[in-house]
Image 1 (spheres, rainbow, N blue to C red):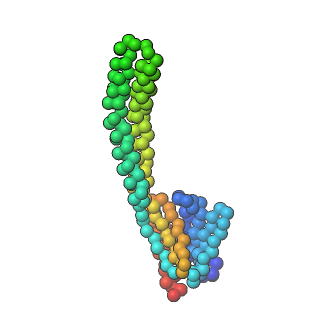
Image 2 (image 1 turned 120 degrees about the vertical axis):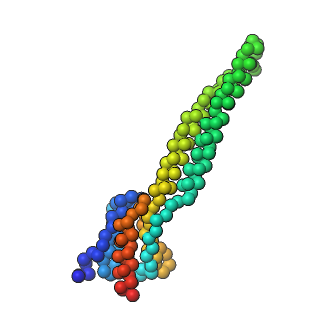
Image 3 (image 1 turned 90 degrees about the horizontal axis):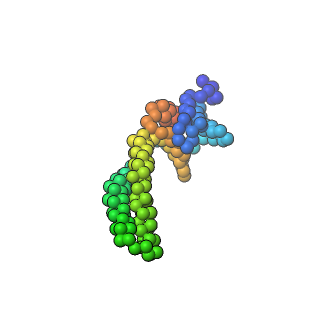
Amino acid sequence: MSADAPLADFEIRSGAQRGSRLTLFPNRLVHQAAGALETVPLAHLASVRVAFERDARKLNWAIALALVALGCAVVAPPLQHWFGALGARLGAQGRSESLDALVASIFASLQALAGLLPWLAALLGATAAGLGAFFALGSTSLTLAFAATERRFEVRGRNGFLHEFAETVSDQLAARR
């Protein structure tokens, strides 16, 4: 086998580095992106790590947004009724004083804003569901550790091909030691 024959390659199809490719040669690892080429000699590589991970922050945000959506959905009807009743009570008194008319229009505006709360609750609920889906999907990451730093490549979801690629890299790394 020549030094230029690749042992394995992996195309990153999702995540921040979408469209780039990792290629393993007997003595180096090459990362090719649209506008960049990075070559890492295997002699400089200390370790290889591959893991499936879920971002707990996405789950926390999903729960928080779902609770806020539930709160908006629960308080919207009572607020609409309350502001409507207050505005009607001022209007039923029959006085046409400018202050009473101003307060009645403020209550009418607040009633209209309370009518928007169910829409806000639906939007927040959909956002919470999306964040929950991204949490459940997770990501598979390949981390290359060097003496002073590390390089991380991440794809969405469970990716067996990245696991196989990492095994090939670690086998090649072990064979060099």
